[in-house]
Length: 357
Image (cartoon, rainbow, N blue to C red; front, side):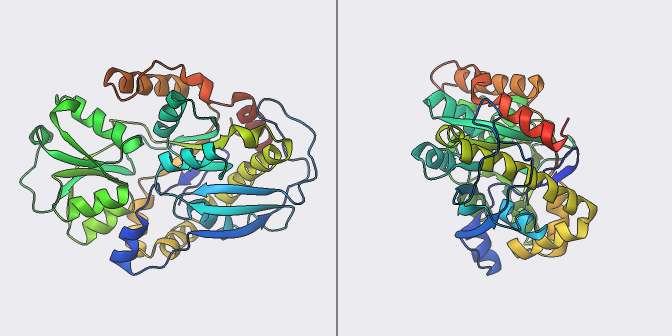
């Protein structure tokens, strides 16, 4: 689950392997569903770069790119979308890159991802903007891990040189891998990358088809409990945990859709407050949606607590450093000024209304 609140922690699962979970746990997960939301009186309305008067949102549909029902689950658990002026159409994705493609193509208005896909989106000229952000509440933990098969002879990071590693390119998992290898003194070019979604990367490493992989919670907890993998390194200390809500420029240019986006973010903040006051509800919701045990939910949730934040200069600087790293490695082909991917006026307006400081 991904949660965000006004100064409150967020519990988050990112890029969860749907097929992996369905196979391992026998769970059934819906890929597209619809619910409704109501615009609260006085809610912020903004068309990308300016706040405007709140329009009548009756008949507006906001298509949200979710990652395995995380946002849908949170908002439903807190009953945060009760009422009905605009409709939220939920669509499911594995990772940020396909969601960026959907936003660019016009089939998704707002989506959930980490920071890395927005770097590649900006480098490609894709018309998406970051409208809200979260940061890790505890830098000593991370939802991302570099793992090896349980029976692997690899016990040190230095042994990864020359190995094949599963990771989805264009995602934060790739940046995590780059940073771990860098601190281990291994050039990125000295490993072979198997470009796999987090679903397939988890399956590949647990099956011994790759020497290592970067995966995320709750996959780590599930496969550890099953004795399939061993954590070689946590991403804590190597990379920050940032969460973004990104919107298509076309949605932001539409006053009614922009108003719905602003209201959606604020309702999400309120839902987080509800779950923060009731941690067991958050964990039980985690169990319900992913089919994991309560113990696995507690383990996963403990690594992914983040806090709502304005888009600060520190976040922008961190992202610029990341973009420069990808440029140096030849993974993007031109230098970019990452500040351009953030809709700072809209973020400021939303946070002012929600009390996020």
